[in-house]
Every structure is written in structure tokens, then in C-alpha cells.
Amino acid sequence: MSVVARTLLGPGPTNPYPEATAALAQPLLGHLDPAFLALLDETCDRLRAVYRTDNRRTLPLSATGSAGMEAAFVNTVGPGDVVVVGVNGLFGVRMCDVAARCGAEVVRVDAIWGHPLDVDAVLSAHPAPKLIAAVHAETSTGIRNDVAALAAGKGDALFLADCVTSLAGIELAVDDWGIDLAYSGTQKCIGVAPGLSPFTINDRAWERRIERPQSWYLDLGMLGGYVGEAASSGGGRTYHHTAPTAMVASLHAGLGRVLEEGLDSVIERHAATGAALQDGLQAMGLELFAAQGHRLPELTTVRVPAGVDSLAVRGELLARYNIEIGAGAGESAATVWRIGLMGYNARPDIVTLILGALGEILRRS
Image (tube, helix red, strand yellow):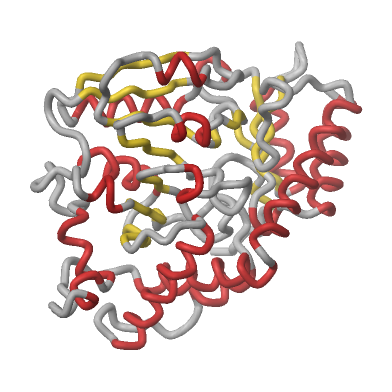
């Protein structure tokens, strides 16, 4: 079976950095090999640098970003706990679902999709929640939420940030902003194939964790020793599960690529290419979906022009140009396109490619 090379510009997996792809092709290490454990430790150090945190418990969970979301909730939320969730897209809705499955009393604070969360509305929704949660970069709508302001106003509550599409793409400072827990994915701006969830939790949240979470696999208390916490306290490492060693090696390489370029430079590159794409789309007469001033540079949402078949355009981009863009989410599935410029794809030549191909197809539609 032949392998088709595609330029993936949707909200899902992006083209990985070449260094990350090369790491996947290296001979496999055993999950208890000392060389792998050293690689894992260095990967955790690199994650701390990209998250801008000193949190000791910062690690790649052996599952995708959705598992990072579940790990955050099952380790901190139990029956009867009050959880406030800001919702202005699909992933805020998912946060509510996961919290409810933990038995939490969920206080949902909605904003119009395509518009940012109202910080004051979220912070005043309940006088004493255990946890406040919000999505930093809402992948379903292309909106940036002000998680720094939410974290600053959390009071005694814990603050959880979904950073799946923001980590290594836009400014994020876990420690300086006061974020207690955060999770991400590897397939967005980090530029690695999907399969891991970079996760961080500070001591404040750790002290309030659920001692025996509903999930065995995502129990952070059991995972701690696997990533060296037990070793640091003199107890030695503990075995929990068979880690995906090739994926960790790829993440190590992808993070190394980001840090070698410089995190600030990577963020600036995403900002520049996102602005160029959005300017180009508007110059073509297209209307952007997300509210001005709150648009993500790495994930652009654009309204499908009236009378244009969204699926047909996406299909032609894929068939003729090997370009894949995403449909909208929920009610906007057929009326919005989502175009991601993340990681390796955040480059001027990709902007030129997508604007040219999309423009050519629309002129014939």
C-alpha cells in the first residue's frame, strides 16, 4: 500500500517536525532500559521548559490529550465537588461531561461560540468551587480565552487549563499565571504525531488530589514513581505500565526542535503565519468566524461562503492538492472551515499554498 504525503491543515494531526519523524524510525528501546529512563527524564525537563513551569510532576501521559483531560479531573474531583467550567466550544462541553462523570456538581458558564469567555462571569459563577476549568485555545472555534486572568482570580479554587492547541503555539506561562493543572497534546504546535498528553500539576493541586481516583491507569499517584519522583525521594522507580518508548523519543526530539529554535521564536512564527493566513483569507473576501482580537494564530476559523459546498471544497483540496482542512464543529460543521498552521506547518510557503489552492477552487465554485 502506498503512503500518501499530505499537508494537514485541519484541527487534527499536523505534519510533524522532521526530527520527530526521524526519532520514530530509530531502533526501539525497552521501557525499563536505563537509556530510555534517562531520555524520559530529559523529556520531562523539556516539557517543563515549554510549559514554563518548575512543577516536579510534569510528564507525558501515555495517551492522547483527551486522557490528559480525564486525568486532570479524576485526580482532583470527586462526588459533590463543585466545578465551574467556561464553555465556548466543543472542548469546554467535554470538560463538563468528564467532570459530571466524576460526580461533580458542574456549574457551566456559557459564551457564544466564536467569542471569548467572560472572565468575570466565570469567576463569579460560584462562591467556593473546588476547581475552575477553561480551554486556553478552543480548537473548535479558533478562540483564545484569557486563562491568565481566570487563574489570577481563582481564589482558593484550583485552576485547570486545557492547553492542547496552545502549548508551543501561543504565550503560556504556567507558573507565572498561577495555573495549577494543565494538559496538552503532541499533534498540535509541538509538532509530533498524536499519542501522548503532556501534563503538569503543581504541589498545591497535588495536596488536594483524590487519594484513590476512579481510574487506575490515570492515577497520578501511581505514575509519579515511574517518572522519577520515587527516585528523588530515595525510594527508586516504580513500574506502572509499558511506556510507548518510540513516542516518547519522538516527543523528546520535537521538544528539542522547539527549544533549539527558541520558544519565543516559535511563538512569533506561529503569530506571523497565522496573521498572514487570516489577512489573505479576508483579502479573498472570506469572513473569519472567531471574534477579532481573540483569534488564534495557529487555528483559523473561516465561514464557508454562501452557496459553496463545504464538503466538496474540502474533498477537492484533498484530492487535487493533498491538503486537508477541517470542518467546523457542532452546529457549524457545514458552515465553517478550520485551518491549522501548527508546528512544522507554521511557515510562509504553507500560507501561500493554502491561499492559492483554496482561491483556485472557490473561483470555480
